[in-house]
Image 1: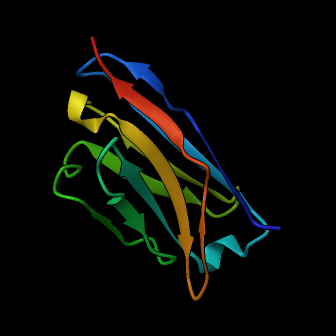
Image 2: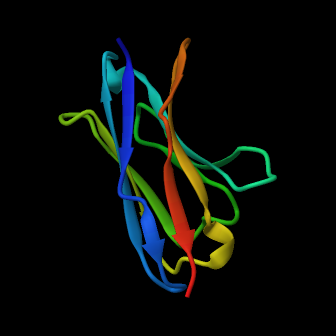
Image 3: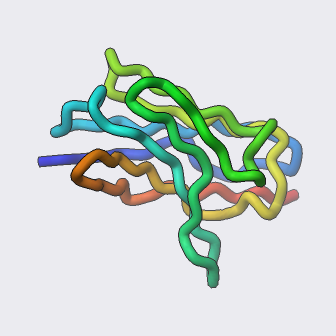
Length: 114
């Protein structure tokens, strides 16, 4: 049974930081590209950042310079460090695992508000 379990969301003030984590089980983690997506109310789900199984990273323009994605293959975990958060970063953030199969976590809410 594949599980992707996100954690680390919450309420933060503008300019603050959060670190999201996604713990994976039931997959050969090192063989999957891992990504973070987000969906704000009324919007489509959008890619935030992705890290390939080789460790290469790419980011949405909105995340560049503020967010950092990383993975720990020994712990089957992917992280998203989010700095300088803005109100427009408010969304549910989802973990994604992809190779020839694709899996999603249940999401964690991030709210940026004063």
